[in-house]
Image (cartoon, rainbow, N blue to C red):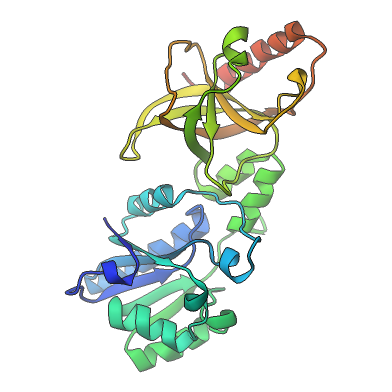
Length: 315
């Protein structure tokens, strides 16, 4: 899969394509529906599929300080899109100047002149151009002008809920990682570099990988979860994976502190992940974060947490 950052990265000889446009944060089941439709059109026309997305999140540029928690890193987003059969991802730097493009200017510069779109598929609520003035109807009219077809793909509704990045963020904020996974089509993942913490887990017999997460990463509510800990190689591929007890919080038993994301790989006290890239995937909520009256009470609870993880997650 090709990965382009900015329109200047698009090869000069790039031919026609089928394009889809959006932030695609999470690459959730609703996004997957849109990409699937783009692939259907591309198959019928024997053309490649290009996903157009943005960095940073447009909300941060249009309304500074309003950056939503991100469900995926940029690299993870590209990997997930590649897994859906996309041929290229074009990440457009979203700047104040870019945000001021009119709908017509956006279509001309991006879809027509650089990517030579023959067809465009987007979610039916898609908006574009300065002040979000453009919608699917206008996109179709501009398609007549610039010689491409456009269609809005119906939003995905499951159990009466519209699948969206906002819905998933809300579920994570409440600790409902199972509902988030149902909407994503896979467990929610939090990535980061493993850093040295206070080493309390090792002293208690439960050595954890303490993740330093990227800015704006969407982490579930404070609590203890069942899931997996994975090591990630320099190319972004998963190198190893272990069932894990995952803790998010401020360690109130030890007086609190910075909020941390830590994963304990079951039955593994031999892992040395410091400085490497790792991830935790969330399968189920176990309990809220608690302050225990003694270290012994905390250790007893941790043994119980591990037993529940072992019952939930196959080894």
